[in-house]
Amino acid sequence: MTTDQPMMPLRVTRNEPIADGINLFEFRAADGAALPEFSAGAHIALRVPSGAIRKYSLCNDPAERDRYQIAVKRETSGRGGSIDLIDNVKPGDTLMVAAPVNDFGLPPRATDFLFIAGGIGITPILAMIRQVQASGKRFRLYYCSRSAETTAFRDELAAPGIREFVTIHYDNGDPSCSLDLKPILKERQNREHLYCCGPRPLMEAVRAMTDHWSPTAVHFEAFSDADTHKAGDKTFRVHLAKTGTTVEVPADKTILEVLRAAGLDVPSSCETGTCGTCRTKYSGGEADHRDLVLAEHEKADTIMICVSRAKGDEITLER
Image (cartoon, rainbow, N blue to C red; front, side):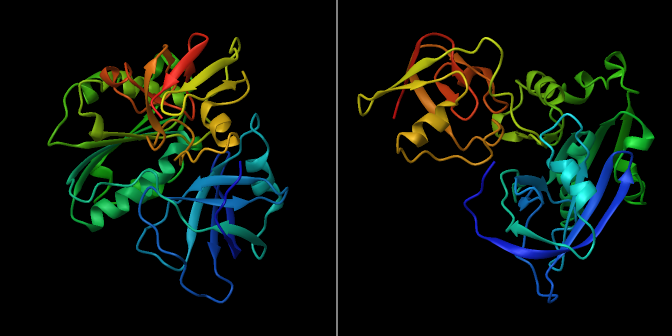
């Protein structure tokens, strides 16, 4: 993962466990200066000690300008960034951090929100709750976790004025004990906007159960890399209708990556199939959809090129 954004040195002022396997980090300017402002749902990119760039959602109150807070889950099967941060960064250290970016923002005119979080996916949702309450708006939260010990921000969510709107569900690691989402998502109440962040199976289940909702009212954010490559993926061709150009997409590359390498200016942001920035029309071939953005009726002529592929040998994009 890379970032083209300029980065600023920030001092680490906290690295402490807040749940089993989850640590809270806090960053401040060394001179106490105000940090670039952010809105709920924003994330920061930072350089871990190994030199890798990782992105984490901000979880503190967006009204705060003196600090950034993130929660990091130790991912033993990940690429090492979380372990590097948790084990090798201590208060007083300086890390390079990019200014916040928001691909998961709240619509300013909406007044009612339904939040569904799974595990560490609570981090952007916590900032959203703070912003929603400060604006005098309404929310309800369903938070899915393995156990009380692995649940981040339990105390914050148990505070008066918040706990009345929060349901925390523990499945003890048993899929058969998962929260029943069907009655929650059966109807859209009070023109709610739904925000979901968590493991991909949770987000896919929510996507499947909200196909009757307005597509503009359902929002997702992935906290891990998208499943862009699967066993059995094959090379295919992308034909660009407007220029007549054809490029080849290898099994280990995305359409977005190949178009960029060809020198094309292609808009993108999250690159996990959740923000919608790279949506592209197609007019030939069949798409293998791997995103969490498109409603069923949109999939016939639209593809998210950051994650999705062609089912056959070729697909034609309207660009």
